[in-house]
Image (cartoon, rainbow, N blue to C red; front, side):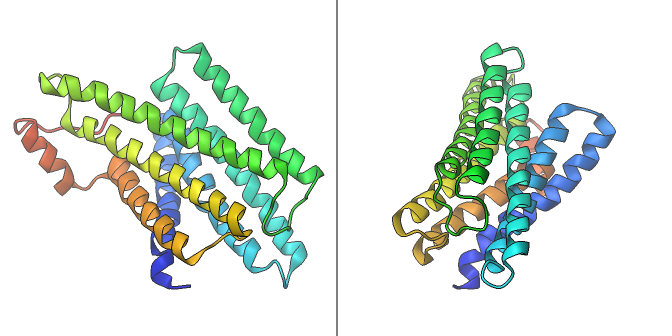
Length: 250
């Protein structure tokens, strides 16, 4: 498989690891839930889980026991990261909505239950995994990413109306658009992997990998601009705001 085809996916994983560490460091300073939960999401689900799954897959034929242990750790990282993302969406976009808190609980319980079901049926170290528990867990991850994208794009639409009358920060409006785009790319990456596994029983397909890599690259760049945009990028929005400095919302 071409290294270029994996470039976007590698950029996604590396960016997730860096963002996770930096956001958790920020959470230590702010002591706030959003920074903590999104930091855990990037570090565990986007970064460590991906690395562990790749290592487990590579060792499946030569070191079965180690591969199984790495896969279990990967699923646990993915689970905690997914739950953290659910909490982030709830606390940032729907803090007062009871249904949102209930949805977080449902997604967390179903995801945890799917992992237990996988352990009790197909087990770990089976490639590609095809158990019902695996597919249910895959569906909940897709649902979580879809929720993240919908909420961000909903806020983007709302903030654009405010921007039109001078009541919104252009950089903040852009951040909602980028976050919605990133989450949509994450959803598409999940969907492509699921379709590949269902169609030919493999994690990777040469053609699909190119497309998924492109989505990974877009998501990586978007996430970086959301949380740590360079000054040159920020200055473009300062100009749109009439020359007044604009700050990232905290």
